[in-house]
Image (cartoon, rainbow, N blue to C red):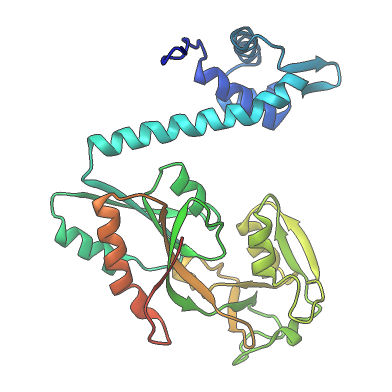
Length: 310
């Protein structure tokens, strides 16, 4: 008969986190800076972890630090351990404090009517809001930093429940002195040869969607510079080095003052959605979904209601 209780495991999650950061940086100095520690201290922590798991995780040489074969095998398990620990703590806190919800939103999207109504109907609840980076919605949900997000598609939907709220046009973003600035509207044909930047380490799905790559005729979108962040892309466009396709932001919601937008005809609009964790039956999440469907979906130009994607 098997023992119903697993054997005790002596594994310090702080050491596991040190290992995952070092595996990402592949350099003790850079990893120590990220972890706000010293290289000797980090080296000692990695040796302690190797003792705990019973295997050498890193190959050290004069040319640098690389994962050993055991380290390659341990890395995905280490990341899953950390995700599971974060989720366990978040779920425990939620169970201990069920009258609390954090609602995330992407820049340029208005959630005020639904949030206000949620507070009015649940005066004892703690309702928090959090602005998220344009590519952080899914991670914020799965890491339990937020409980619901009003954001834009495309979004990987596994482990999530998606409610489509309304359509949103996509616009062309150009410098204020661009030849197309001030036009009533433009088409893809007008910018067929204009380079569009790519954001490094962005989800390929997002890069392809916002670059319209490939184009409707099957041709690849012209390659623009590779940038590290959205703000870098805006600087390039403001300098006249590229154009972009984006949501209809204005200067109050994050548009660079050197940029302007032009309506883009002939392409499908984007979609604004409410995303929550699949299987999350928290009463405040359910209530916010109801208010979002009633108040935020009203922005749909076609008069339609919301729909769900599991």
